[in-house]
Amino acid sequence: MAPLELKETTQGVLLAVKVQPRSRRPGFQGVHAGGLRLGVKEPPEQGKANQAVARLLAEALQVAPGAIKLLRGATSSRKEFLIQGLSADQVRRRLEPLLGRE
Image 1 (cartoon, rainbow, N blue to C red):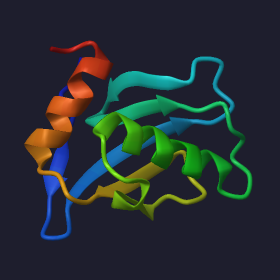
Image 2: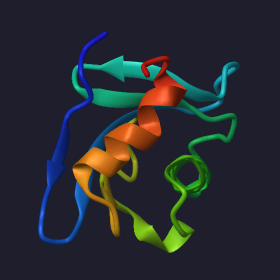
Image 3: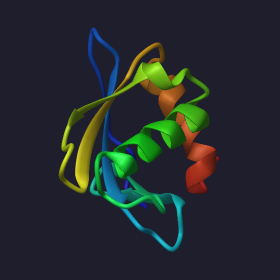
Image 4: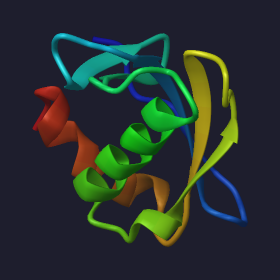
């Protein structure tokens, strides 16, 4: 499996996410091309899938929902999220168990 690529900025950590809305397998599905693959059961309508991804990330990273911001890709399956309040190492450590890596 490819390594998860994270970019640390002055505002927080940037995380690329490939989202599969209306997924039969919601949750973390691994890493593809350096980005996180996630499935959500919500449809890609009126931002429902984006909100579901942000909630899933906040829960997995143990941060407040407001610490997860969608920066790019509101209408695309490829998105970029900003995670505030954690370092890249902290994000990696919190996600790896969910991706089958320890």
